[in-house]
Amino acid sequence: MNIVEKILARASGKSSVAPDDVIFANVDKVMVHDVSGPGVIKVFDKLRKEGILIDKLWDPTKVWVAEDHFVPSAEKVSAENIVKLSNFTKQYGIEKHFKYGMGQYGICHTISHEEAMVMPGEVYVGGDSHTNTTGALGSFACGLGHTDVAYVLLNGKIWFKVPETMYFKLNGKLPDHVMAKDLILKIIGEIGTDGGAYKTMQFGGSGIDEMSVESRLTMCNMTTEAGAKNGIVEPDQKVVDYLSSRGATNFNLIKGDGDAEYSKVFEYDASEMEPIVAKPFSPENVTIVREAPNVELDKSYIGSCTGAKYEDLVAAAKILKGRQVKIRTEILPAAISIYKRAMETGLLKIFLDAGVTVGPPTCGACCGAHMGVLAKDEICISTTNRNFPGRMGHIESQTYLASPLVAAASAVTGKITDPRDLQ
Amino acid sequence: MKGNIIKYAQDNIDTDVIIPGQYLKVHDYAELATHAMEGLDPNFHSKVKNGDFILSGKNFGCGSSREHAPIALSHSGIKAVLALSFARIFYRNAVDGAFLLPIEIEHDAYDGISEGDEVDIDISANEIKNLTKNQTYKMKPFSEIIGKIIAAGGLFKYKPDQD
Image (cartoon, rainbow over all chains, first blue to last red; front, side, top):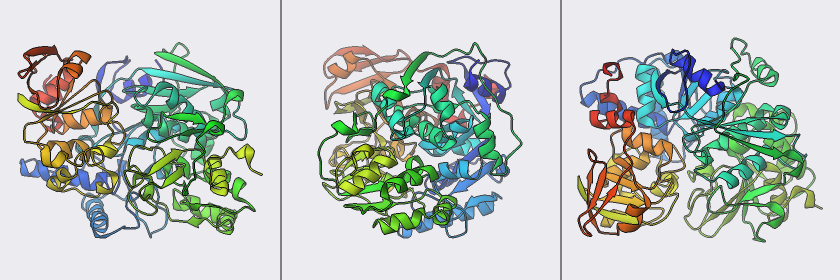
């Protein structure tokens, strides 16, 4: 069995599973945020009306809550959702609630790794599509809707069809000007936004071994844009070190068998990789940066679970140090822990000196919620994950998806720019 | 189950156009319905009738996990979406929450059915009859678990232990 089959077999109490088997998997961790939380509350209300008693959760110690989409509260509806969420965690005794304005908080997927909320080998579900991100720690991490999350909160399990696994192998170390974001965009460009539908996308090979845990998180994060059920990387010493440094030591490293089966294998040569952008209006609409359209950009946005981890900020700072931005540029570290580290290591000063506005952790404009949404006809280069019509604001705005290096280089020139071409 | 078709002849209709991100904070189902399909078809809310079906291409509902998407369609009156394929979270949200039926069709139905056609979906026969054009198409049967959850009326009413 491969790693996903082994995790799902263990979670469903079976000696083995195979693709297309339908199982009920016991869930190890579950997450809701300020959008899916109120959605779950609504499902609970509906169930109560149908006479179903909901006085306690299956296991509140396995549940954690993030505030990320509309925080700090954008207006009164969002503020009320935050109150609802606080009442919910209090009512059901959920202690792991990362509240904005009270120390560590951030985008749920970032909290999942920054705070070591999910361990290798676990089944982790979240009320958000980019839950896939956390597969980079070697867990089965999968996004679900409100009804399914409500079911997990009450029953501790959920049904899955065991996915077939596509294996993406990177040979060699990526060049310095190429980031994990470029590789995952290239893959999505190749297989399309439904190329991974219902499947696992597993990443491996010497190039993935060379990658930092944060880069692997970027890879798994955007398996969502290929429609995948989950993304995963087999855990190694880097994952052990990453989690240990965050206080987590009690976990089992599950890996696939030597004869594990994959439905399809893709191979990439790292030395041939180029910086890439996805043009409007789909993450699959990719081109190499040096062949990108010569458009006048209005904005550069460096934020989100995809593109505002610490190493993403380091990459942006490498470009912005001693330079000035030519267009509006926002950088929103994805969690307070990252924000603080960026302050301590001088990154925030580099950004502010370059003219950038540094904002608080939030999903913000990535999903068109607030804090820097786009006006009609505005064109943005962004380290986020989707560029469907209206994703970041007005239906007639445009978003180009890129790595933090490319977004920062483009902020300096006002054009879509390969970091190698900066003066 | 009979209904009239609203056709969007394109692939990859994503959740950002089914219900734009600015409405994710809204959890009032009736209010969500007024914004359904707003990112693609601002006239949707005025033209949709209770019992209508949507017909579309492949990868319908791709993008986010927002259950707002099937909720907004369902509370607009949409009883089924007929598409060449579905994104996985939209599909399971539609079924597990019992909001609407996701019907996978083949190209004959996609090409043959037009805007406004009245069709009759017969799940037991895995057939779609176009009553306007007097044509019949096959639908892809539901997998076993999906069929059972639909028959039960959603995931919370489905009792896996009784299988």
